[in-house]
Image (tube, rainbow, N blue to C red):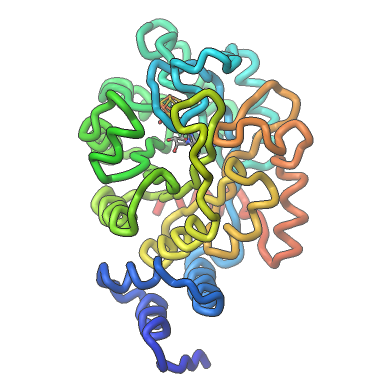
Length: 354
Ligand code: SAM
Ligand code: MD0
Ligand code: SF4
């Protein structure tokens, strides 16, 4: 059986986590601050145990379609902030979006994440927005695939329309739940409004994804505070990403955090939210970062992007895209080698209905 020697504090906490007993903030903090290799390895093992309990060895694939990189905001961490004049922007047209979606679906993704900057072309023009809604409807009826939108903060009416168009998920990351830090990152954006849109989306039956950025000046207590907010939101998918400094932005000279920080947070999220979806994003360290994130308990691979379509990522906007290392063909053999495998369509859709 599963006999654990409860000789020290880490074992006691991990045993509680294994039985899904609620952890105190002190216990969560203790786990986040683990520094011994063996202790961290034990925590990752419990994270994988809980992942297995709810998902067996099945991993979900999310296609990422960043269809407009225009944005009216000026987030200090983001390459695509409005003031960044040196970045080449694009807005994919309807035909391109359809084609790329078709290609992603054929490659076996379980969902497509339609992401944009807060592009005035859509957000300030009802006709263009309606066309976008129609495109989502079309993709939905044609391919019967789960859809996510990541459009930034939008009105309740727009969220209603996404729901009507058949969209399943609204992704909108707070980055931090420390209001002071938030104001430094998402300058001139309302903290409360961004939170409230997620509550609204949840209320009208959309699934929601909440997420945090690390390496941006947060404390351990900020992370614990974010976990509490994720719980209150009842987020269906929760993510953490390490900050990648971007050229020609206010934070370009920051140092990217050591990855063990993100990995420990992934593992603790798995302990706290064992049945939820937790991404291993290809956008942070590309393909080479996948193994560790999966070992820490992630169960969704996000930022799958087809090569040579002129598409970009966000945090590592080009890494591994055009050489095909962000495609399912490349990733599936790697999963199999590590005793994991892509779920089938029905398995993903069964999770959505729960
Ligand atoms: N524009 C929409 C928004 O901000 O909600 C959706 C797309 S936005 C580009 C998606 C996410 O990418 C952000 O919420 C942030 O967490 C992440 N991101 C942006 N820049 C990043 C960076 N330099 N390093 C790591 N993650 C980053
Ligand atoms: C990702 N680069 O999945 C994407 C992006 C937006 N919903 C997701 C951050 O990692
Ligand atoms: Fe715009 Fe999103 Fe980048 Fe902020 S994170 S600047 S809202 S694209």
